[in-house]
Image (cartoon, rainbow, N blue to C red; front, top):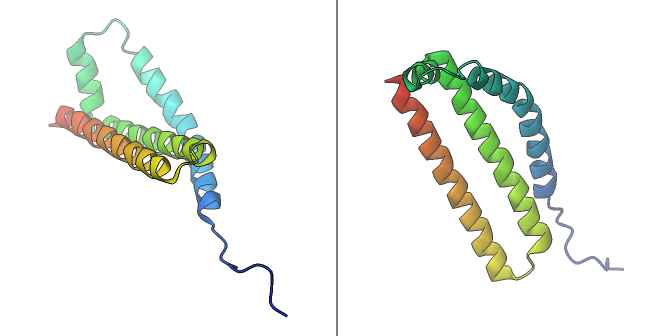
Length: 119
């Protein structure tokens, strides 16, 4: 007898996205506290002092981690919404590509901005 299920392929992409969403969420907890504490500690400082803080190698590294992490977390979350609520094949593909492109552009510009302060 043949199985009524024609395709035995199991898509694990959703599980992978789910795990990455959780990993980035957990990583964002300490990074967010650190970033907010750093910004709050510079309230009342001039722009040059804040730029020096951002440009310090360790701070720049953590800020880049924070920006990449929050960007990835956002992209995965928006992609989940697209997958769940957009049903047209062409619109879903266009939306997914747009979200990826926008997040990639934001990540690149963010990293360049931080790195420009380290030089």
